Length: 346
Ligand SMILES: Nc1ncnc2c1ncn2[C@@H]1O[C@H](COP(=O)(O)OP(=O)(O)O)[C@@H](O)[C@H]1O
Ligand SMILES: [Mg+2]
Image 1 (cartoon, rainbow, N blue to C red):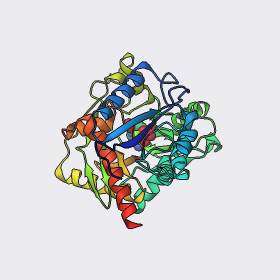
Image 2: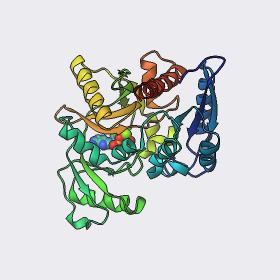
Image 3: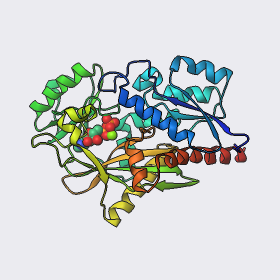
Image 4: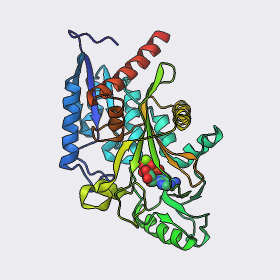
């Protein structure tokens, strides 16, 4: 996949659909802040040599474009799902596969695996990666039967973006768990929940860029700083975190983590193992939190993490002294190295 200044690589950048509602956004759709971040991404891409970018944000045009005017490569920044339906994130990647268009990032299989947190946990456990205890609560389980060891966090078994996680998500008894599940079931009808061991210690994020056979690079990890939250509010990234400064959760900050060498080595090794096992590609972000026992446990794998300059991935790139443009270039180059290696092997 050569790219020369005279013959730039034609890249189609596919994002979430700006013209459709989006249930994972606080206002139910794209805000002016989201559109600003989108513009910043376009400008950062434009500064890269050897590429010609075109952005597609209207999903109703996608099929026709892939079929009739396929690009050399898709930069798959659609982290919202087809027409912003979160469970259809994999469908977008499946379209590229069906039309034979090379693309950056995870394949549908990886998205399926990672979307289900209970499955991620089982795989992690099988590989010796520490995880929180949990109880799976099917959508139709009578609430009177629900019981766990407390404190717990109530969250969707499948999902993303802190949807279904609010201020009262940390529960300390069967009674509180059942009351929270009543809210949860009204909010997300038909969805299974997890009652997960509440991990009260620091929360971390780790990003990996690259691929297992071509070298995986880790950015310095982040820590979520809940220090400015008023007393009484749980230290979690509740959905409210997204509403900005008008809620106390607007005070939550992302800072560079200060981990011991041993914790850092373990975190990177565990993330790399999960990257490979969950078939992540090119880049992925891993969320960890420390339990009451002091052990750092994996809570989530994001094979298609947020790409904006304000997102955790870009903040971690910053900790590695990389600009936002450089981070975007690293994603593109990882994909190109992977695709080239594959075509050489044919
Ligand atoms: N077991 C847990 N203990 C403490 N906090 C948790 C736990 N699981 C999730 N959280 C909090 O909820 C947030 C969102 O949960 P996560 O599992 O990462 O789902 P997603 O980001 O996909 O919505 C985390 O960033 C963390 O703050
Ligand atoms: Mg998360």
